[in-house]
Image 1 (cartoon, one colour):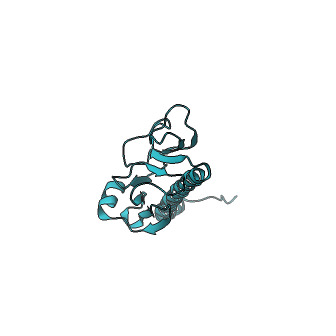
Image 2: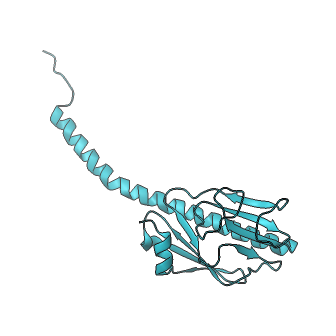
Image 3: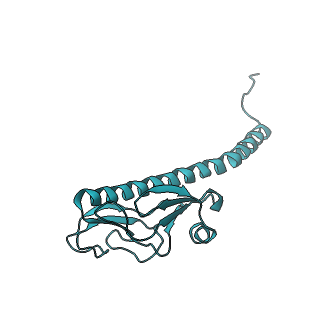
Length: 178
């Protein structure tokens, strides 16, 4: 008589149970890593946009503006930048994107659970001809699906200098998903 090879139902159930436990442990770690990568991508895009606007303003003597945008065509009047943003040259210093003004960059909406907000009073960032920005310091608060404990704050001074900071409780409450 030939012996039959294969797996019994019990062996298959044990393998499935082990696989389920391993998947249950690995999936949250993978998800956290994915959120961290998305957050890093958003931060890098923001830094690139800030440097582009500042550098172009200093080079040309024309105001460079960053503003939140939901449609990639007009500035939004909201401190929430999660829907994307615009970088444009503003020769008439109106702080609004108008016909004929050159768009340097259109940032699409942030992916995943990544959220970005500015200080409430600083919706638009305007770089003057010397590369510095007009107005008071501005804080960008970046949060992702990992929660407020992993939130980041990026503070820009009037001279255009950037530094890492600590997000305030109010900024965390407004920015971080619940």
